[in-house]
Image 1: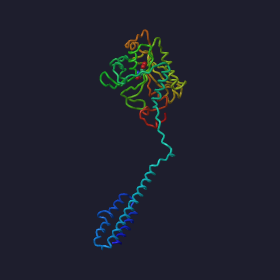
Image 2 (image 1 turned 120 degrees about the vertical axis):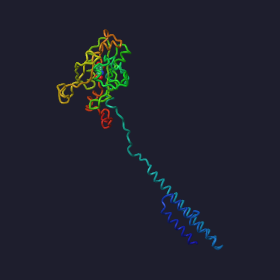
Image 3 (image 1 turned 90 degrees about the horizontal axis):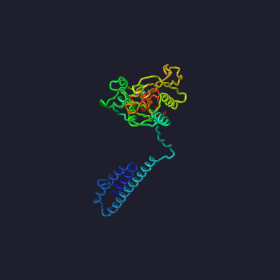
Image 4 (image 1 turned 60 degrees about the vertical axis):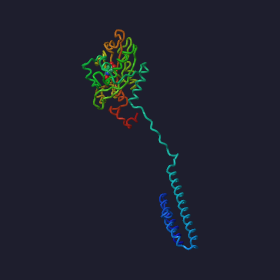
Length: 339
Ligand code: DAH
């Protein structure tokens, strides 16, 4: 029996040394010391021993139990500190590593140019006003001298919400809202989104931006329009920027003009970049039609004024040499990072 006990101790210690997780150690303890364990099985045979043998074997059995228990708990605590050290190592913070610099956002090129245009006009004493994108037929067309069935409506494919309500096709609607609500002198610009049912391509989008301008006062002439727009273009594109006014037709201006910018490449002579034209079309403008002034309660005998509408995408593309409008909407960071 003595040998059996010594064997158990030896076996337990052997198995213990190859145990490297806590669950396995618990199982090992049960295996040797549990109710159905090997040591208990031996102790059950104590009855067969003589009265002299019993205390000797009893003492030995207790010692074996204690030894195994101690060995197991030593191993458990050794394993626990090994695990803790490992975890600690994994979680160590290396303060010498370079940090992650947060990426800094940038303004979208359309916002950059929009801000520049606003600054230029604020410098000339203009005010920036806002108008609704969902508009009524009255403000978008009717009051701009474009009654129902006027052919000029066909050039602006309109998204209608119902017969009378629509997504504005032009910021010119804000001219009417302003003139109906204020007395001259008026000097405003109104930047904002406009909508037209156009297919997307390199120069078209169903949603784009315009900046409307309106000046009403006594004695305002076409020369004021020219001077204002020329200054705008020189500030945006540099002092060499050259513009020209080309006769056109808009129902809400008389006379009307389209404004072209001399091609940067050839200075107006005509080259492959401007397709031989020498100039690129920039915006629509004119002297506010007397009928429009009258409709807004402004006496055309006393006051006159000019108005213009600039496509923000077009001047942004010119400013940064962007040749496809879709780039402005796709939000590709490789593109946006360049501004
Ligand atoms: N509304 C015109 C357009 O969308 C642009 C325009 C032309 C605005 C003449 C004006 C103007 O204020 O007087 O093409």
